[in-house]
Image (cartoon, rainbow over all chains, first blue to last red; front, side, top):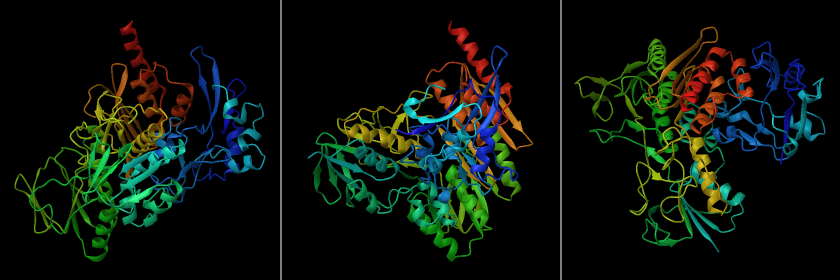
Length: 151
Length: 425
């Protein structure tokens, strides 16, 4: 059992508020080249219409990044089920990026892996993840995995 | 009470024991290991030598003593001579035999050093264990090494070149193959890596067969009569699976053959990790896929089944990743396969990759300094091997477009699928 951040693509307008909130919450050095853990983009559908997406780590139940890391930097947070990390021993080998089917792991200026940790500390203290709290259309929700609908 | 033996405690052995306990196994577990420095990751040895990682960090899951308390197992340091598969027993080096209900063989692999004249010279080294790392570290710190020869243009070989280069040691990288990473790189990517290495002053000697090592490791002699003088030789030609403890009833090719539940052909004898041959999803054949992640998955699967929970691991494809000297190389699939190639270059971001497609499937991919798209494309490739449809899902597309991958490439992948789909109709 764990939590996930769910996107309702029908409600998303790719406004980018979630990405800005993510940069702020995680103190990401955007001017230094870092990106938000959450990417926001529109996609042209086959019918010529547009779909909007906001995507970050999916916090997979059986997360491939965890077993791929040669240094055991990643783990499941027991309380929230989010995929969290301690990058002290990260060697910057990018094995987690290669293992992730969603391309979620990023790397800081020091070459060490950083990623969306689901704002686990906020969630443990009764708050929502920053991206969810700042989503103006209610497209992002933090829910238990069992409630999560297919994206 | 049920009794289980685990022979070898690397990545696979550790994950198996953990998985057994997590799946509720209540019986006794005896772990046989010939090193107390377990479960170690061989990939971290060069990081330890250069000081990037502390010694303890080469044990990513912690030391065996603490783990034996956490997962409640006995550590036995007497080596296993043979697994007697019919009796479900292990014959130990001291002549004793111990009987079990089930046995896991997770003995891993060892560095392979070809038995050429002089291979046991004082200045000839290989790199796999923490002992190897200690040895090389001592040599590098204690003696003046000016020139080194690294034999084997492999993932280990290049990490040693990186290590030596950083210490100002002149390096020659030697291989019998005509180019670097012969088991993983396509020629144009290999050529670019070689161009950069040569530019940094690393000497490359490819298409060279080794004949002998002379003067205790101070001269490398090739079959063509040429030779190089040096202060040390590092042998990184490859690894060999430790399968010797399997008795004659157990099916062994290069590795011990296992099914999706990590069972060998003999009842209650399991095998996982670098000593096993699981399924190569690309070919459907059994093959050793000696990768950390694969060992973890196989170990986990073996552990679940040994705890009585049916769990299958479909298998994997060949894949490699290494980063060295400011470069980042990733290779997927069968590099010897033929097909139509798509070369992607983003000069501004300094990214290159090659995707080779045959029929409706990608058969080989190479990424140079462009790991960002690798995870999505690896998943796409593996899904294709499993018979997935032609469309890439939206999330994957969003990620690829965000990485700057042109739509043309995505269309290339999907259109190739389409042709085959039409054909099948």
